[in-house]
Length: 301
Image (cartoon, rainbow, N blue to C red; front, side):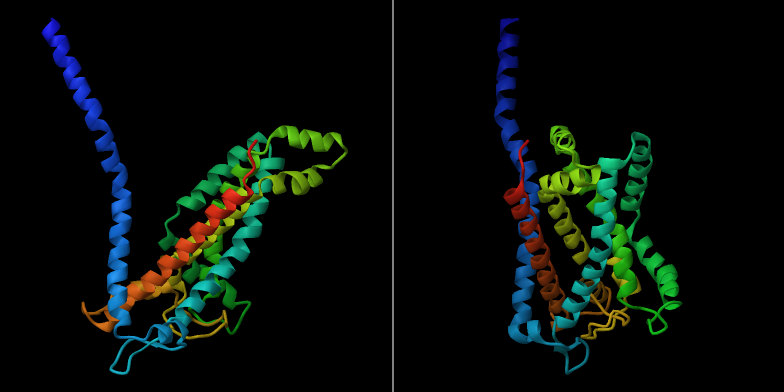
């Protein structure tokens, strides 16, 4: 019996020593994966810039990746990405914020039980479905009001992306406002403030860090969106600010090149990684901004 107890203690002691290493290995998987992706992007991007001038790539307004006289300028893709993102946020920010305010400050428990699942359904719809919705429904609808709108354009996918991002903005903003203590609301109401004044002058300022963070994360989501713009915005690599025309985003270009006949080792193949690296930097900057805002304006209650 004593020998058995000693053996059990030995096994337990061994497991105690092994568990931290096992947990560290599991936790390190995400870090190793990120490093691997980053190394791949950097390696292939360096090979691209050995063939294409760095400054001409980021300042060029022409993108003609095929043929002997290929020209690689990323500005048409940047323009398409930023315009579609701006349109999406013009839809998502006001609607998402107003939805969050209603759910947090005005909705009854019954209304909240109905609206919350609807928002979750919106968040769970595959993006390819949103893409076909933009192409087959939203675009024809808009063309009945905007005669000059092309069959593929940047306006329609931008609007649908905004609808897709609404649940993210609404949910994160509502969580931030719900975290504001009721004592602050009660104190403002006791001083004679109306419900609207309490919402805009007390609750929203107190939750501003979470609200702005939701906006920034929504922007990151819009910048990285792929299927909606691939299906509904077309593949025209035009440097234009006309939202009725067809444009191509960085993600749509990546899909086009990776799904085409770009032979490994060619300049066209390496351009895929250069654009992907640009997209990676954009989303990374957005995430850093969100983290900074959250830390800078966070309120502890």
